Length: 413
Image 1 (cartoon, rainbow, N blue to C red):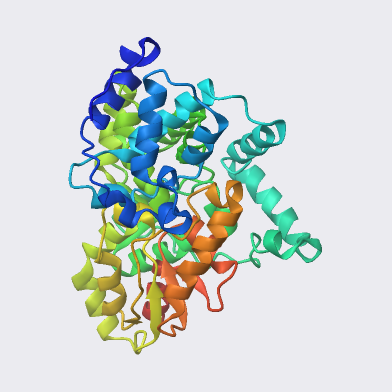
Image 2 (cartoon, one colour; image 1 turned 45 degrees about the horizontal axis):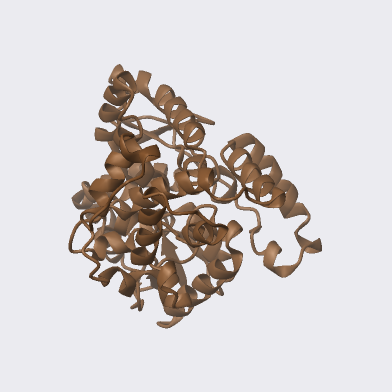
């Protein structure tokens, strides 16, 4: 794709990166076949190819309208198009640049939109504040309309967290929304790892990874959250007190993997981020490295005994982290029967704050995903990201839980 960037962006870091990405696109349209919003809405401008044209026109100096911003807002950033693209177009980074400049060049958002986005960015990213707000919302759930009440799941309790007793220790990300939405996920991971000789250590209130504010166009706030998290983790890693960091939310893990890009203009932070990223693993990656020990443990237990469950692989797991088939293998090892899921590459509609900012599209994608997940008659659904779990659970007829919780059940005495 030929480009002639406008003066305002040509010699900037954004311009250099955007131009390199744009030049890779060959207009083939493969991306439209795997784009959830294009499949749903049928509008070329709600496909990756259409949004690439909008970004190109904007960066070349064409007028930017609220309509341009709307089509960029509607993108889930699921990155399914990146998995499909034969030319290696890094669409996720391009759309981040596009949104950033659209925020500056498009007409100002309405006051209600600005307030909503500010509240999301500055409430959910604060674990203590979000936890209090979520508990209050849950208490008021009976008074809410059904669409809003679905956002507040019944209270879940955190189970037993084993005392650190092993020589091998790993840190775990506590996160921002996860302690309130799915409080037992990290505890379940701690119980599973404890059985195979690893102690999981949590730094309480370590906070947001930076994804939430970054994806809401508060890039500086996202960098601040990421830098704060690195400072929480760095001392234990530097002193060798832990082997690394494990992340149980694939959305956070996918964003953390990009810390080297996030801090590319800050040499001291970049060096630290690179070391941390190299020692950070999704929980699936860590558990799968100990599959032999897991299999030995399962051999002494009744395991899942053929219970049928459906696995929803979050976009951040399969497209962001590019982890495919690993969780499924572990669940089958535990004795679960995985039911077939049509269009497993498509997003469920959660996408961080997307389900709150684009509720109609998110609800349609969720309903389509639940239909695909339930087609095989499973007793439950497993996933790997807190947002997907909360989003699906609001309308599911069966339990929706993190896959590590299902594995923990199979290992229970």
